[in-house]
View 1 (spheres, rainbow, N blue to C red):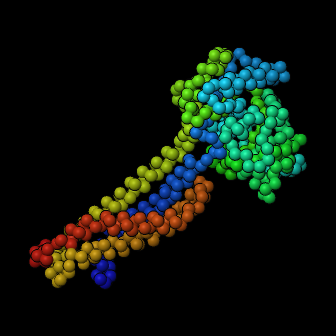
View 2 (cartoon, one colour):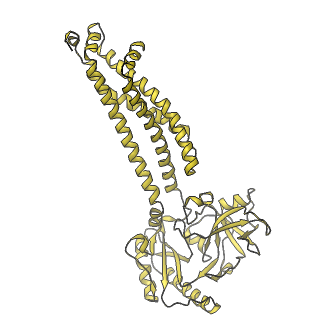
View 3 (cartoon, rainbow, N blue to C red):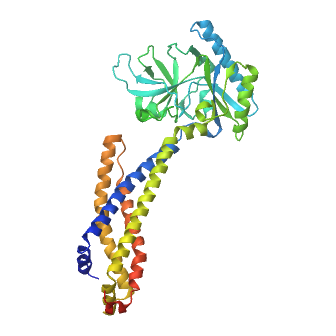
Length: 421
């Protein structure tokens, strides 16, 4: 089959050809970038935090009529109340262990600051989030210690919520250790947090621990974290509780009851909306933290499906219109010896030429749109693999959409050549 008669026919339908070409181009550009956004959101939603997520839950509570002063007696009283709560939680039959901690990954309550290697260093070497809590944090959270040692009871400190103290020892995440000491020799080295002196010594490195926030401003240090063995004492407290395998729901029911039984002068919400509750499984924390990403992925997916359906429908409609206009010409070709397969191949080739022009233009638009998104919203560069796959999908969609009207055209009888228009 020669292309000359096909090109001649397309020149007579310039408006339709231009419209469907632009539609294919815009669909390719939007779908490629939308699928790229979906893949980024899905990867972001499923990235591991480094914790034993399946068995972990959080309890946040507020004491009523608790000391509010910043004097040592008030701080010691609050710390005693906090330690009593932790011991109560540890004694529950469905709980493996518990620890006081100021925040958890993805919970949104972020404490962060710059990390320096020298006391007089003007610019931070890295930025990191801080986790303050009991010395058993590594075990309770299920973190993997890959270098150095864990905290011991002798490392434990406590401090008032407004008090500023420097911890003698800390444990850092591997991401932060690599950023500070690329040679892999972080253990035993000293760091300065927030310009504080004296320095803190790194005694251990955990494989992975995510920061409490997933905000875009914190993406550059998403896994730069520091564990500090210092309980923060205030009239509120937070506990990370690790349930025994398979006993998470039972432990979550027992924990508030046990705490109220020991001291009813507190506030713990166990029902209502997520924002109103203070007892959450880590699965709930993850789902709430990534709700916007999940919604964006679903929205982008719906847009892709709609665009592909509209483009396919446009190809079907335009080809059906052309078949209706060309019935006499098709009949003449059939009378001159063209087979049904020849007619089918004619319309499929015609569509392939239109779709080919559309995907070439669409590929250019897809790359341009990605560059614009990178500039405006700090997105990552899209891999050309998305464009190549998009081109293949659009070409296959075009061939699939044109098949039904092309098949109808192939069944036009040679008798049509003798009928008057």
